[in-house]
Length: 353
View 1 (cartoon, rainbow, N blue to C red):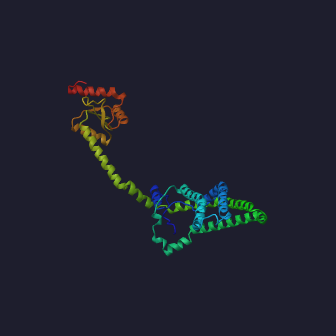
View 2: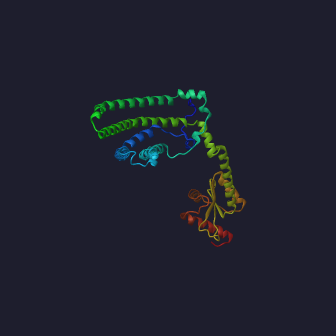
View 3: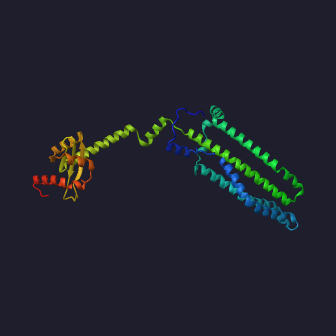
């Protein structure tokens, strides 16, 4: 299908996860084939002597005295017995192929089990979409890859047959054991040749499949914005929520100013409200509100409204504003300066410090 020109952005993690759940992954079918050929070659080297001895014993058993030593009532089970022995002989190879096939796929895209990729899709039976797929880059690449594989197979076969042709003519004058040895040797050489030449083909195929996958899951800028709205919220709504939270925080802070013991000002640019509850177990005065410029003016107005003392001390106001956040106690190095202010306030109230 033709690529949408608006899809220019890399897929988001959510888009990748959704594609994975639908069975869309970067997968090369040539990787399992290449891995199977390599593992088959490695497995056959120790397995062939074992299989040869089993087959030799089996043929000796059947061909030495095939009928006379076997009771007539058991002769009907000879064929199932032979098939079961051959099946057990081939079972390890089939298990190896199965394990290698599963492992090579997991190595490409991890463990994944989904049935969504098997769900019928209407675009698969759309004739226009089918024609677009026929003349797509993917189809051309698959054609080139298959022609390359065919050419490699023919070249390897021709080279090996030419190299081994002289030995083939010796079969007429050698024993059956020598014939079996040469046959196994030629088979292993051909498997190794195909395995080694399949590696670059598989690597190129995997690179193309990953490129094709990345292109297929690309998103447009509009899709990314919609996804951000879905998972992170509409920016306008988020802005309104933040504004509402700031307003609520401001109201709480202004309510705390009414309960403060003193407001220290710049006097115009900074204002910091402090509260010290000796009976409540406070270790040191705590900042309950602070602000600059317009907010500082509102804090002073609130303090005047509720009769909270206001002390003008520009250096101390700036130091408190910069070193403390709302809800924090004052730093140790400001204890002495704050203690003098609280002592002054307590004297006016007629209280002892």
